[in-house]
Length: 273
Image (cartoon, rainbow, N blue to C red; front, side, top):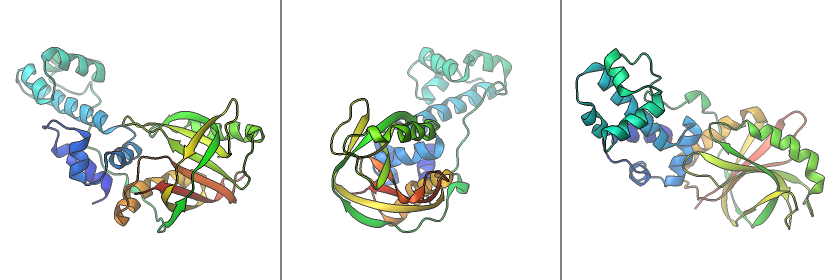
């Protein structure tokens, strides 16, 4: 079973329990970081957002289809009081539970249904090279992104390319797209930059730690890079028994990549334990 399918299955079977990320990661036999990264990248939301949506959707159907006391439904959904449940329900759906009880229908609602892995995102990815990396700094420009919305990245590269000559002591040969400061909500910082020994005023930077990395290769157009990345995190790493560490991962663009056409070879470096 692919990792994302396993996470979804474990989450669905635990909806009636007190779910924590530790509980789910133990059942999926992966670290919380790896689990959250795979789910966020595959579903475009955090695991706990999915849990909240699924519980409220199940509750909505129960309210519409039977006469169960709403407090009991609220408790089953993990809420300690009728009031807390009503606030969460109204915030999520935009209507009160009483409206759904009166209507006896969920047609007004957009429910969170059980999700499935996006099989059209799985592509062939070659086995990675294992390399040891010495620590270095990447200096450039960064933007806040999420696995649901990476639309800021292309324009970030355009802006950085116009200012690349401003980087003090820039090392020729490659550019780097670094994903760092990821949190459990699916947000992360993406930095487009180049290697440099020191900070540059007016620019951002991130230090890449020394360590062992699994280096995957993407060949083709950069627009297909998300599929390669999706496959790496959801299939390649678990299949190879590799556990990512909570450190920045990055794309490396060297002379084999043509930024004008968007075609060529891109390396994806994943820190592993």
